[in-house]
Image 1 (cartoon, helix red, strand yellow):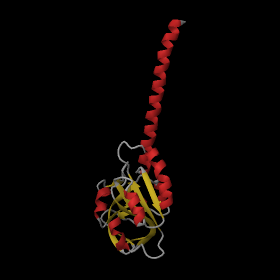
Image 2 (tube, one colour; image 1 turned 90 degrees about the vertical axis):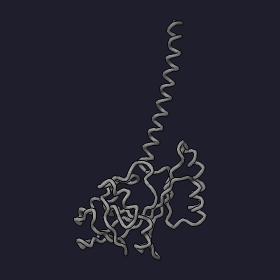
Image 3 (cartoon, one colour; image 1 turned 180 degrees about the vertical axis):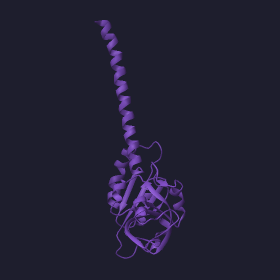
Image 4 (cartoon, one colour; image 1 turned 30 degrees about the vertical axis):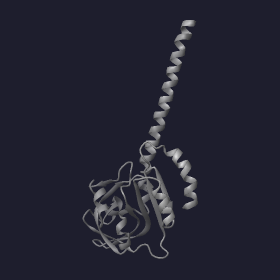
Length: 214
């Protein structure tokens, strides 16, 4: 009995160690998957442009960061003469920080960010017989279609069934003249925390401060 007891103790300790290690690995895997799903560590969203005070606070959260302005508007295809309600996304920065924007061709995910180009959901292009290289008009600005949007972290593709997504560079937003008096837009800031920084303790401190600002 003493021999069995002596053997059981180290085996039990080893088993507890393995369970603890498994739990830690599982928690890390869940955290990594969550980051990939939303594309960032933190998303701050507002119904109004960020004020100077809010900008200062947001910049203090860390880097890199990205910015996005979302609007609903009509897209016009000069080639076919068709129009469709779309969800226009004016993006600046290298979002997503986790996962990837998947496009066809793959290079379009970076090419459109240089200006004057868009990537649009496949269903939208199929509806109007459009393809990369064709023109599309968003607001008062005309863009060239750089590629087809296949997948983007942060939102299910089914969400684009009513208003397909069209991404274009934030620097071209003023040319569209979409932000006029009475325009309804959502402003988003994407934040990536420094490597090794635990998001949960960081967010516990940040959330009360964010609620008072935004």
